[in-house]
Length: 157
Image (cartoon, rainbow, N blue to C red; front, side):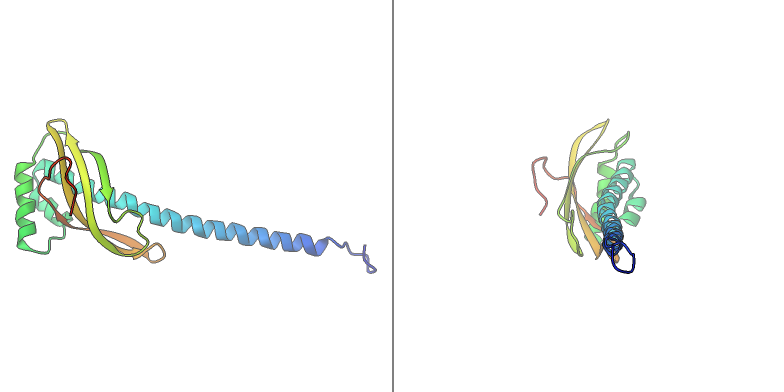
């Protein structure tokens, strides 16, 4: 006890609560940013799956709404893919290798996707993906191009 009768440990306890409160707020902020960043991985996978589903249905118009083609060659390739890769059944993504995965800034790079349907053997294609933004400002995913099928062991370039 001090001369005025107050406990010596009271200021320390108050400081401890302040430190705990700051740590909790910091943890929540980091968790929110991490969640936002990891959510972009799901957004890319979902965008790729949607274009592949449209492709398997033979729906070139839907594919062209999903892929932001920059030239006539891309449009022609998308239309040819819709004709040639039409297949019954649900599309299942077997593997997806994204060169933009876990990026903290804007980046444009190919994503290699391996997919199947019940009526088709394994198909491998490359999707040019553009990620924009940061975890702080929010990230967006845009598909810029979709290749014709490539070899099963081939890499995207």
